[in-house]
Image (cartoon, rainbow, N blue to C red):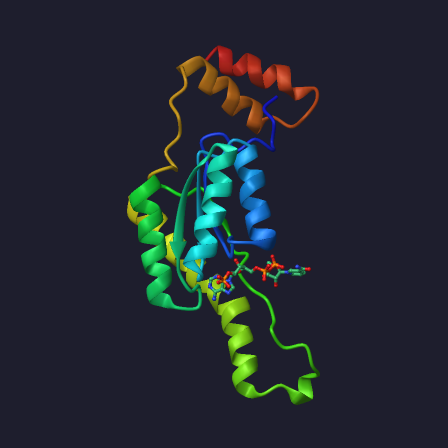
Length: 179
Ligand SMILES: NC(=O)c1ccc[n+]([C@@H]2O[C@H](COP(=O)([O-])OP(=O)(O)OC[C@H]3O[C@@H](n4cnc5c(N)ncnc54)[C@H](OP(=O)(O)O)[C@@H]3O)[C@@H](O)[C@H]2O)c1
């Protein structure tokens, strides 16, 4: 059985990955065999250090300085990821946080909006841009096509799916053999 924790040949984009949890996730993904990692944060210098860390683990790495609350930055980030790696398999919407530590009654509406932008709107912007990029790459219906199986095996599989569990299974299989 294949190891569910292996990420061989996968490409992942992790927002907020210049430090903290995001960088730790990127490192673990690199150790799990990911082919490529896209790191995203606003501070370019910190990102470069993070990129060196990931490359030290042996994965290819692209660092994109971008603000995940900016639609323009998010589009640029997704385009850069696609240019470098083609398809991205895994998205980790990790960027977030709260700079305000006081009580709600003391929080100004502007601060509340910033928090919602960083923790909620950003996940929507990044997820939407990634999904749109996936759909652009895959024409409608692609990926849903069934693999071709030899006729006999296909019929047996179909019969097994139709048959209730238990005693009718051999009969269903027998019928499929005589098709
Ligand atoms: N640490 C905890 O105990 C804890 C608990 C619960 C939930 N979380 C959540 O887990 C996530 C990571 O937490 P953490 O403690 O690892 O945070 P952290 O150490 O503060 O790191 C945050 C990362 O996000 C980046 N970032 C912040 N704002 C950004 C923006 N607008 N655009 C792009 N990147 C941005 C930061 O880089 P730049 O500043 O350079 O952009 C940094 O790389 C957050 O969503 C946090 O809310 C953490």
